[in-house]
Amino acid sequence: MDSLWFREILSKRVKVTLVCGTYSGCLRHVDAASKAIILDQVEILDALSTNFPNESATKTTNVNNNKRDKPEDTTPEKTFHKQHFSELEDESLEYILIDQFQQKFGPAIFHIKQQSVIGVAVEGIDICRFGKLCLIQIATNDQIYLFDIFLLGPVAFKNGLKMILEDSDILKVIHDCRLVSDCLYHQYRVGLTNIFDTQVADVLQFSLETGGLLPSCVSTLEESLVCHLCLPPTKILFLQRSARAVKVNPKVWTCRPLPTGLMQRAGLDVMYLLSLRSTLMDKLMVDFTTQVDNYLSMYRNMPCINLGSAEDYLMELPYELKELTVIQRLRREDALKNYKTDENGLLVRPCPQSEKIPEMKGRVVNIDDIPELEATDPSGENVLEMQNEDIPLLEPSPDCGEDRCPPLEEVSHSTF
Image 1 (spheres, one colour):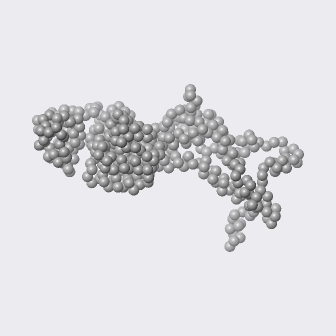
Image 2: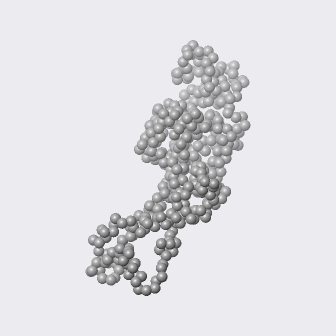
Image 3: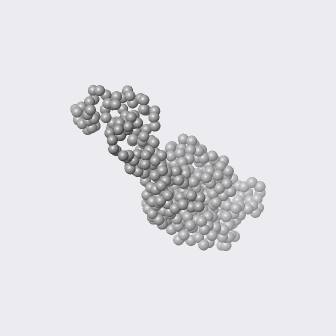
C-alpha cells in the first residue's frame, strides 16, 4: 500500500473497489501499520451485498486508479492554512493521540481506571445532542490522552470510555459540563457521574468573596486559568487565537490528520483542570479553615479555667462564628465599590486580559469595623461590671491564682 500517496489525498473523495463491491467516500484516515483506511460519507456504487464490508474485507481494499489524478476536494475549508494553527513551543505539553484500538487504547483505559481524579474535555462541531463529537481529552496527574472519537467511533465507549465516565469512584473535573453531558447521554447513552465543574466552582468562589453577590456571566476556561492559576500569557494567547480560528470553521475538527496546533489546543484545554480544581477548592475553604483555626485557639489562649464550667457554653454559637454575618456585609460593600453592576444588579467582572481584577481576598475584620462592637462612653465604674455580666466568662480554678497560664514555650521548656 502506497501510504504516502494515501496521505496526500486525505479528505478527498475516492472510489474503493473491494471483493464485495465498489464504494465511494471521503478518505479520512490511513493506517499504514494495519493497512486499513477509513471513509466517511460512504455511497454504495456497486455492491454484491447490501451490507458494508467487515474489517477483514477492508484490509484488502484497492483504490481505483481512475480517481488518482483528480480526486474531489472535500476539505472543510480551503482557506484553512497552517498559520491559523501555529504550534506552541512548550516541552511540558505532551500528549498521546489514540486513533486506533491496537497498542495504545487498552493501556490508556487501564491507566485511567486506576485514577481517583481525572480532567475531561471534548472537542467537535456544535457539541450537543445534535452535534458531532470528534475528540475526548482525558488528563491524569502524569499523562494526557486524546481519544479520536471521529475515527474510533461509538465502539470506543463500549470498550472502556463509558465505564470510566460513569464510574462513581473517579472524580471527573470538567469546565462547563452542560453540553458535554447532553451530547454523551443522547448520542452514546453515557451518564456522567461524580463531576466537579470548575465553572460552577468559580461562580461560588466569586459569590463567597463578594458576600453573596453574583457575577453577570460565567467565566470561560481561559478566563478561569488567568484568574486562578495566573497562566502564562503565551499559552492564553495561543488558546484564544486557536479558539477564534475554530469558531470560523468548526469542521476543522474533522480534518485528518489533525494539525499539531489543534492537538496542542486540545491538550491545553484539559492540562490544567486538576490544578484549577485544587486552587478553587482552597479558595472555597478559606472561611472554613479560618474558623477552625479560631476554634483551636478559642479556649487554648484563655487564662487557666475550670474546664467543668465550659460545658454550659459549648452549645452556644461562638462570637467568632457570629462575625460571619458582619464579614459578609463588609464584603458586599467592598464588592459594590470595586465592581460595576448591570441592569439586573449583577456584578460585571472585567476581562482578565484587559483590566486588572480587583483583589478581593478574605476580608480581615478589625474591631473598629464592626458597629456592634464600637466602644461606648467609658465613664463610670459600672461599665466593666456590665460587660462581665453580659458575657459569660469562664472563671479560673482556685489553685491557679491570678497569674495567667505561662506561654506554651515556657511550658515545653519546663517539662525537660
